[in-house]
Amino acid sequence: MYKYSDQWYFGDYLDSLPGKNYNYIVYFVTILLFIEIAVSTESTLINNQTTLLLDFFLNLIELFFLSDYIGKIINTWSKNDYKIKSLIFIFFKPRCFFDFSSILLLTTGYFNNESPLVITAYILKTIFNIYDSKLRVAMKRLAFIFLSNPTRTFFPIGILSILTYLFASTMYVIEKNNDPQHFGSIIRSLWFSVVSVTTIGYGDVTPVSVLGKLVSTVFGILGILCIALLTANIVDMDNNYNQKIQGSDK
Image (cartoon, rainbow, N blue to C red; front, top):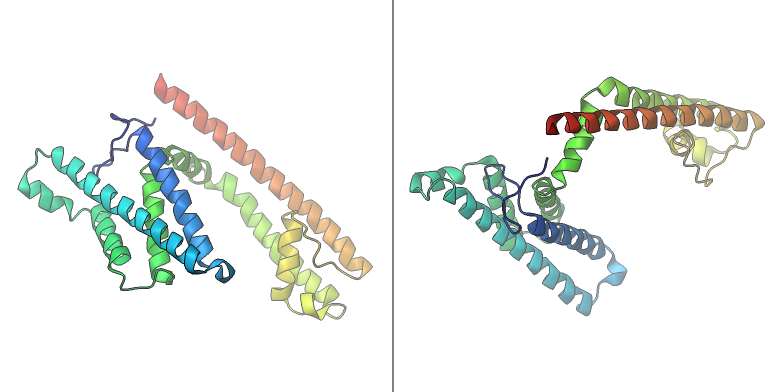
């Protein structure tokens, strides 16, 4: 269960989660960061006004990261009775060291904000903040569903992957002369295979021959069966997790 002591608690480096209201700030900053990254990659939206706005939002995000880091250090230190020796050890905790390194990277301006290194640092920092929020409950649920009994979840995914490759190979053999642009190799055929077997079916690529259409139908039906099996297993594992939570609450 999710436990917190104070609504505005920052959290700490001793694995105590932040308060409920502070979580809302984390969610807001996360959404703001993703919007900022997405907009900064679209050249048609970049002008003097948007650049100033993006820089302003970026400064807000960096300020939040810095205050979050300082707040967690103070909270951790307070739980160790403000001992100098404890303060030194805090900086050597892996999570604290990562926060310090990422803040140093993001605030020094040595690298461009659009560089892959800076964007990766932002994303990792956000993921850790999300993990430290109430969303950790959802992440634990997902971990239970996919990792507690891997055979039940990864078996349909494995079968689906094998079907996708076999389908791509088959369509390559059947349609390579009819449509070499889309079926001229197994790699080219993979796109049609993925969207067909996973039942997405964009319709941007279609087989020409009758045999190709027949094979596509068969593999499409097999894909539906794999997706249905995977969905059923996920729902069943989710119910098992609910029973586990209810049992721990008694």
